[in-house]
Length: 469
Image (cartoon, rainbow, N blue to C red; front, side, top):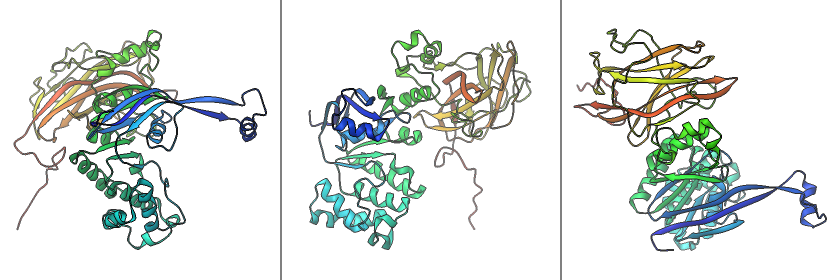
């Protein structure tokens, strides 16, 4: 392994023995039965990856995909069934709440314990003590047994130790979800300092915005298999297909699953570009049916009343379609046209900040649907979702539709986004017997250019009224 490689994982496999009863475990351990008393579970199957020095790499996937298992093997907490792991550099790992801490010791004792385990001398730990205590910021509680800490205090101390002992490789497994928002901001700022210092960060998170913002590269796992690796934008799009069952994990599955074939859509799945325009995973309210997010429904033509958009369902696109669009779904309903108009009712993908514009899509219904959800979302070119809405969130359309119907949906928006380039995604989804279903999604189907002579901080303009007296 060359010096520019921090971690190399080669053909990693991890099998677990699952026992139905504890007595079966004892019988198997004592070899009292010739017949196996367990079933095997393959947590990881032939996983290979290489992480270069200075990279920040994220691992994403559904629960049970093997994310935490691979981190534990890399850090030596677990042993692999097969395969090799090579690590070039000193690792500091924060795998789960409580790992490496003695509950009976106080905070100071645990700092020394963890530092010693990583390989620091007592003198080296003393030199870093002030930085650790300042970062943790738990006051006099540091002298109390950690078993008395709240989960937030525990996380503050654990992360402070992990990140301030000057590791060459930092590994974090979903740990930041425990801390409060201010502590999370402090931790992510530290990630940025690590990146600038050329250190390596490997972390698992379900926070896709953080994955998109901080990672140079992302690895997508599912049911112990590596589905792909690449840019955060591409892998997040594939992950969202996995979440709604629209991505074939079996190389032969696409031959038997028409939805999986459509999942590849207009672009090869491993190069997918996209935004989560139209789908949540549960019916826990409109916000969830909305990682998806989408808006107002109308059948009256362009939102400004000009009628320019039409409502035939065969309206041609008014803006150029992105050739890199990711498209998939069952096609029980199909988006047949889309576009946008400026505040004058003219087809235009360029809007002045502060002005109104109207996005639209035409949808043909091919089969009866109990209550379709029409969705729109906006993200930046880095893949971070900025905003979006849907007809369920807006309570704009909750009716059943029949095969053969055509719907014209408009989203009239005042654009307060900062000047720059954005990507628009559209979708039609719904619930069938409580199961979330994707009928048609178009990720990154068109662009929005916002022109501004005043860009403030962040993603959108607060339009503050500022007075100085």
